[in-house]
Length: 187
Length: 171
Image (cartoon, rainbow over the protein chains, first blue to last red):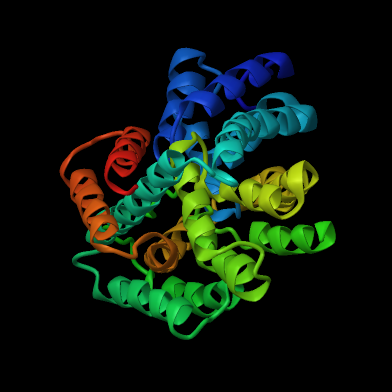
């Protein structure tokens, strides 16, 4: 029997709405752990890590996935739906409000500001990629997979599913022994 | 149009392994190159707003839906991005007892890591096509990258600062 208590779906709704509106990218899973494991003690650390490992291998953004699995564990199907929606919707609504500004920016100053943001997003993305790639610095096969997957998507115009279908099995075969690097946590 | 949006984003949702960032190159291929729904510059702009808002970058699909078909497009794109992946997670969560001790589970998570990372590099190139086109934007991109590598600055703060710099120098 799991030690976790059943939690009211309304409480899950409030917690994940708040976390969804206030946390960013890679910090989200850590924020969920602080709230659900440490503050509210709804789950043990061991349970949290189990659910997180499922969230990491499943498709979809990691933190709403984690919210869904926590909701499912604590409050069944209703808890899963409520938690997933609550974790996903605040950011979508904030993005839509920002998007109303960005869709057709007539004001030159807004256009210029958005060009600045887009240029910075390029630097940000390469910085994240570089930082995560550095985790594999002593793992030559993994570095080759990183380069090959990037080249296949860019120059071979290989689709996302074909890239996954070709490279994940190769990568799986090369990950026989526990690797030193950890799986990156996308946002 | 709504049907095509649903199709494009549900397929992305099903294959959004590794957190969703890996879908960006395919999202670019589908919405910019294949369907010509938006321009490279719009794609880069929506991606940047995805970085500015809390939550996963993949949510930028909502803005593509908005650009293509207004509010109904935004709703359809959001639902198509969320529901297929959510259903798969739900099923995995239901079956989790069976995988509890499976040694391949952690190994699979590790195996996905480098592939996703390769696609994040490719995402950077896709965004650069619509975002970096003169000396000033190259300089902003380089400074932003160096700042991110050198400090623990919140990415939203970085994006706001870049917006302010852009408003001043890119007019």
